[in-house]
Image (cartoon, rainbow, N blue to C red; front, side, top):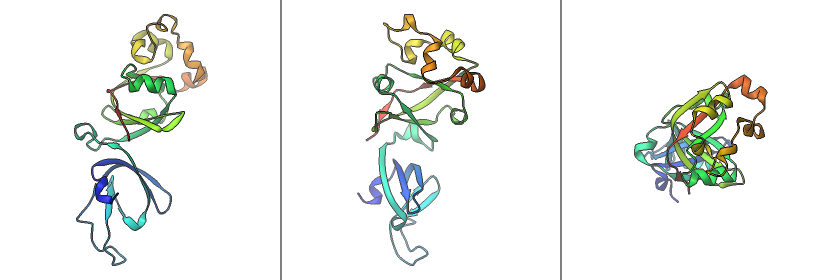
Length: 191
């Protein structure tokens, strides 16, 4: 692909120093000009950073942006186990349960999350954060949020318990951080 083919698409760019940048790629034809070395070459702009073709080690296409949803939205990355990943992909799971830790406190409604299948990181989907439901612990979260939206099924919801989250988080982590239900949009898939 030519750099111009990435214009308006969500990419991960690795520069010649090995640093990674995620964001919307803008092929900046005004910058397609002579740079400090006096050489004319293509350039991409990602979140305000300009990268000439000679400075780019790798560009990975993550997916197509939907303009109404992706206009300058911050992007966050998270992993999901295969079963919850499939449920979210199918639109059956619309609330992701996590600790309200430092990483999740950076989330804002309107932000975009790139979920990767923990078993196959090439499988990705994108969702937009619609609402953050913060609670002191999973017991209150389980009382207040619809568990069918949290990844339980009609067969498993009757035995759902806040203790199910002990597979992922300790009671000490829960007490320290609190918890969050991240309500998300219907997903769209990466490439």
